[in-house]
Image 1 (cartoon, chains in turn purple, brown, green):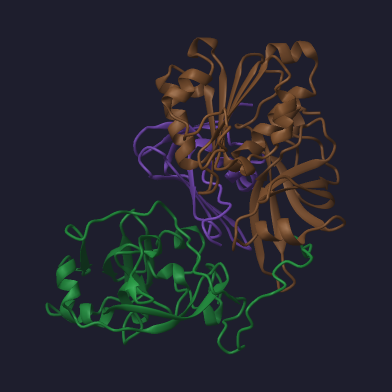
Image 2 (cartoon, rainbow over the protein chains, first blue to last red):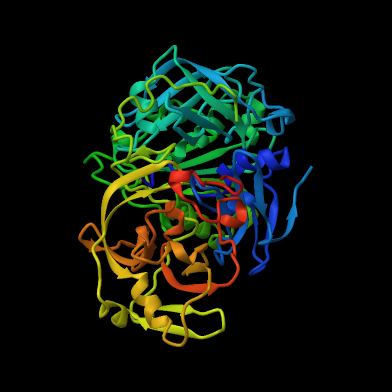
Length: 88
Length: 255
Length: 208
């Protein structure tokens, strides 16, 4: 896997986040706990590749959401998020 | 047809789609035409996740934007072949009609558009970033005349060479619609008789081509990260509301 | 995950064939060197770079880049194994053995902490038993395949612990904290194994 075909923002985290939220959250508004920047999930920068999902603030690069799927569980760290608003 | 369910269907499951047809678009881009069982439709701009599992259990997964309009019962994906990559050479060189392909989707509620949203639309693409924007254009082309009249479009598409422009013939046709304006910029060796732009998208080009901020257009920008971030920032400088500029960043390919 | 996954016809039909005893369970050999990062590539100038070992009692020992370069160095050739299932054989590195650094850090008192947390520019951390970085098993590596380690692979320097899954070989490493208790790092907090031995297939928390 070169740096090919890489989707680099939260748009493509949509599928993985669906497993957790049971709905699409790519448009959800987030507030970064570190610097206060607001952005939709789609506007967060995506890292982690096959290891897991790391969504980072595009302003300060702090990890806002981290998600790993192991064979037995989903592991979520949302401590980098202070607020999230999902329109219904 | 796009329905609210298409954005938030009850379960997102992996399904085995059947490859019905393949179509070469350019020397590096190929379209796969898929029949996806129990497909409930999608919104223009959404993508699917594709998963490949080898006999020995090895797995690879990627996301691909849906190129087809929601009105098309088949799901079309346009794949750009990246040399030495893991997935795209398989999809472009090995996969053939009759094969199965595991997909999950449609996914995405942010980078989506429909003719239900009245107002001017600005589409800016770099390289394979054109794919989700093409779904939007095809969706609009299938709409009624009054819907099309309410959603005038300007598309600015940056490609490396003329041979890398995907859907070129279709743009010529779309250009017949008075409410559609297509601008192409070729950044590497444009033909000598080229009358389009010949450089990377910059502020002057956007000032000239994009809707003025007073038209309150919604903008969708898709392609390599540097292009997307630069264009998004320039549009805001030109007066676009930040919330009206939607972005989708692809990897370091395209122009 | 499905019980019977759909097999994609012809996907990875051609794969390098590796001798069975060299490949840990569940791994596939690659000739590439995939880049996997938890965050953006940091850019730290060598003038400001340093490496620090922090002891549990609060003492620390620090090396500048020049000081690190002056230490005796090894050129290990090792196989590496990523938890995402690729393995790469005979990778060539240049670096300073952790034993050398720990010896200097033990001057004020023998090293008796049982665990270590490696920390990096950008905030990445990984934890492992101290016994897994001693006795010639680990290095601070700054050379790869005969050239300076490129930034996307962890340059200027990364931890190299090849007998464990490669996420333990922290890129852009800036130091080690020696600890009395195991303190899960970036991926370990999210379910990856605290030790990560590929031969025991210790991928996730709860694996043997």
